[in-house]
Amino acid sequence: MNDLEQIESWRRRIDELDAQILELLNERSRCALAIGAVKRRLAREIYDPEREAAIVRHVLEVNHGPLQDDAVKRLFERILDESRRIERVSGGSTDPARAAGKA
Image 1 (cartoon, rainbow, N blue to C red):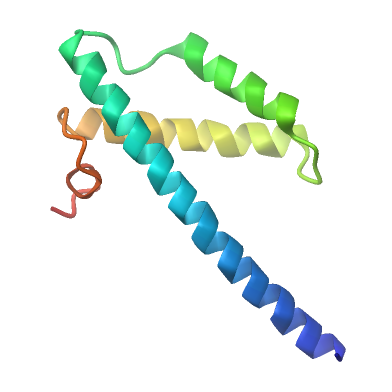
Image 2 (image 1 turned 60 degrees about the vertical axis):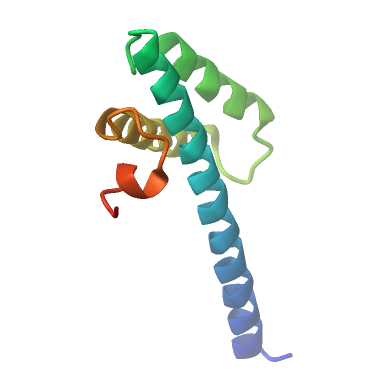
């Protein structure tokens, strides 16, 4: 396999991984929506800084690279930001399409 073929092969693999990452992020979002619905019923705040700090600590503990910890932290902070956003805009719905404004 020549160099250009290798590049194309790696790009196909990245496309496959991106689809898997997206599937996992959507599943995570469904979980966040379910948690948000329960929080609403319990009249609890969406933002839980202690839980978010625990999530970041956990992913840093299980990170084996090559992503550096600061990159992992930034990525998960963004994921958490988006999770809070969809919990807020869902209005208690656990329907991901509604939360995304697609319904």
